[in-house]
Amino acid sequence: MQGPLTTEPIFLFASHSQDEPAMVLPGTYDVFYACQNCIDIPFNSFATIVEGYGANADGVITASLSSIRVEVSATLNGSPFPASIYQGGVIWGGIGNDDLVELTATQVSTPDIILLAGDYNFYYQHNNGDQVPANQWALVDQQTLMAPPN
Image 1 (spheres, rainbow, N blue to C red):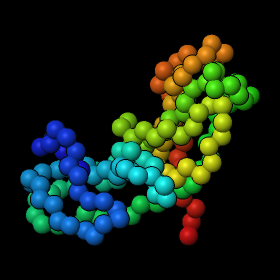
Image 2 (cartoon, one colour; image 1 turned 45 degrees about the vertical axis):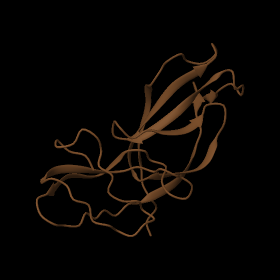
Image 3 (cartoon, helix red, strand yellow; image 1 turned 135 degrees about the vertical axis):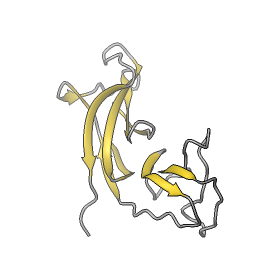
């Protein structure tokens, strides 16, 4: 949780623990999801799940989160990137501007990344080599990832 009355995010609870109350000053806050130990839960690092939550009295914050499993791969001009670890970059993705998840290195496909459903920005970051683009943090795609219907 973060808002104008905080300089750092306020930790509220872990998803695997029992709900415990937290006291905050009255105000308007945004609530974020951040994975700390990502194996079987979404890998997102700072995804906004509730915007403008008004904390003016005792209450409960609820959010229904949907996730999706994705396989991530990258191409360069429609062809695979060089297979060498010395010629590549990293593909990052996230919801909004603060959520960044390292999704895959360009020379491999990464199966089974779990992400929250939402509108994603995808970025390319040069790692090494002169046979791949030298750009740092270049926006390369935007997609909406939706969980399949139940």
